[in-house]
Image 1 (cartoon, rainbow, N blue to C red):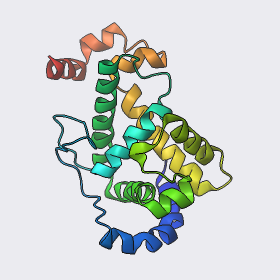
Image 2 (image 1 turned 90 degrees about the horizontal axis):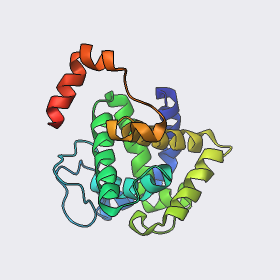
Image 3 (image 1 turned 180 degrees about the horizontal axis):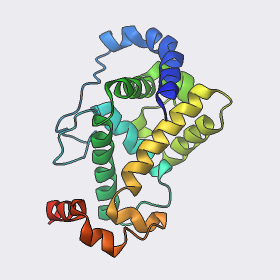
Length: 200
């Protein structure tokens, strides 16, 4: 997703966000970073979120199983750990983006979190916390296959963020068919040792 794509997304979503503006101020919508979230709406421990809001976390908790269908572990504990770690890496990745790209992603997430945008552009009438994997998958397919570039750009952004965060993790390399870096690189390059020390 390049900057032009994000800008198209931002411009295309302006009307919906403008119509929803009153709801932002009167409806208690808060897109501030979640920090260390608590409660059922954001079950991600030990991470101080710098970009994702509580609503963003709920959004991705609904979309990740559809975006990563077949790749997430089947057992409950590894499944939840993979979900949590992917959310953390999404937040860390976006936090390293340029201010312009962070702003465009904020527009995309607000568009999907606010009811007018969620209903008008995503076709999702229920809150993300109650959306099934099948409903999330159908929404993503509509955006992927849409003849409107705005929706295609939104799908690409969500998909790329998720795939980089998930498959970029060492424990998920086998799921992508990547065998890992060659042994000589692991031995020679300091970043691999630094990463290993952080995990130990």
